[in-house]
Length: 208
Ligand code: GDP
Image 1 (spheres, rainbow, N blue to C red):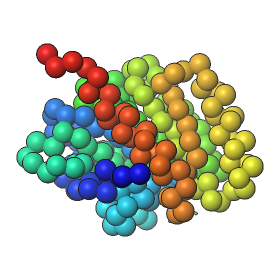
Image 2 (image 1 turned 90 degrees about the horizontal axis):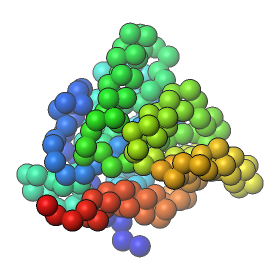
Image 3 (image 1 turned 135 degrees about the vertical axis):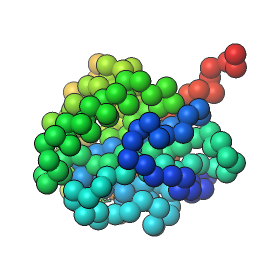
Image 4 (image 1 turned 30 degrees about the horizontal axis):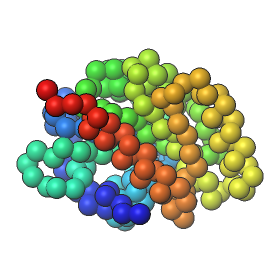
């Protein structure tokens, strides 16, 4: 299968959501620090150094924007790499501020078509993951849960965790879930398919 995300390019970094480009469509990636968000982005785009891995916890957290495909001055499709949450060392006040901003982003950002929440399969659905899922559901936003590091557990354990989470969110059509490994690329086809489906939703809306 062709992977359109191989053509992803770094577009900009910023500290505020208000600096994001307007127009077009985007899918955002979030997750607890160390869940493997950067690794997932690198595997998805098949570019080793696109997103920086092993960040120093607590350093200035940036929102990184990658454009996909045709590179003109007004890229239509974007992948958004949001700062990881759950760093123990970040002061409570900063954490609160960031959570508020994130909530607002999920609620109000029209360009946002879907959220990919990356979790370590061995520690899924932590408090902030669940908060993020609730906000997405409340905002009628599609959310795809990525159970990363599936290579760290047995296939049986991975499937049991997947089933448990699928069952928990069975009543919410906007929530989907899959197994993934950034290390082995397990689940890559499904992730490409999901991201593509989220971004192309707008294509179904007739031009005004
Ligand atoms: P981030 O903080 O969420 O961006 O996480 P990173 O991408 O920096 O990954 C954190 C650590 O987990 C690094 O040591 C990665 O090599 C490792 N890692 C990420 N994804 C996987 C995976 O799918 N399998 C395994 N075994 N390790 C992974």
